[in-house]
Length: 314
Image (cartoon, rainbow, N blue to C red; front, top):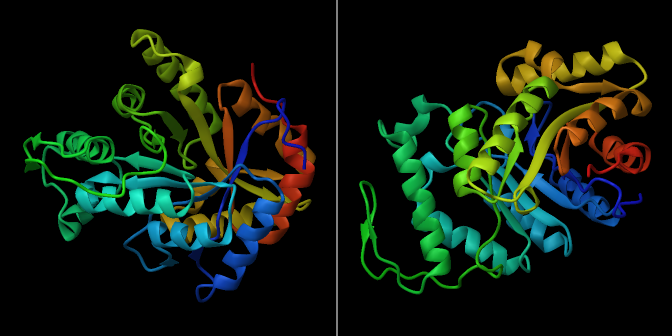
């Protein structure tokens, strides 16, 4: 795999949700070790706390992955901020950044199912305010010795947590989201944005227009704001078989098999490259590939037959 300057930095989603059987930690271990050998830029997980599918909790999983790897970025896309205590989250993630040697990327979002918020002490109202205030708590605890916080949800004087994250001033914070207001928040408060895997290429292009407009409005450089896209992919010479497997996975995870057909990219390696290149040409500076079956096959095939033929944008 050639990941030189002209090729797009690429991440890969780690097997995390298991719809066909028990949790397979042997697969996870082999996957992340081979991924790092293949020079993937980042190893990514996501959050799914409640549901009937076996899905590993992301912070614990990244801690495990950090012990097996040494160079790849460790990203979570995304933590649902409204369902996490920001003081505890700041401590957990600072510890993870230290243990991994400064490799954490925090994906942070408001999303999730509001019906589940009360089960995890989330807000019943003022969700956006709670989200922004929680983010401020995390950043303050990461960057100040003994910050004072006075807000609607969090109030404390001289609260300290140590160790601070290894990365300075703090680990990169990439937002998720697709609503125009969420995209504007990403530019205002974040260091980057990852387009959701559950959005189409056309939607990504539309969202990029909003992102670029907001960057210009806030006088922020596009070079300093990282833009990425999660892409559900399936490589198979039998397109019908690939689509059916995608639909099965999307039904289990999203309750909507049609979404798999709408947002995924599938076919042979040669067939999927043009659509992936379109995402890059539209502004994606990193692609995070998310295979949902035959994980080892996809890990190696994407590295050998897809990434070398994708060219980074200007």
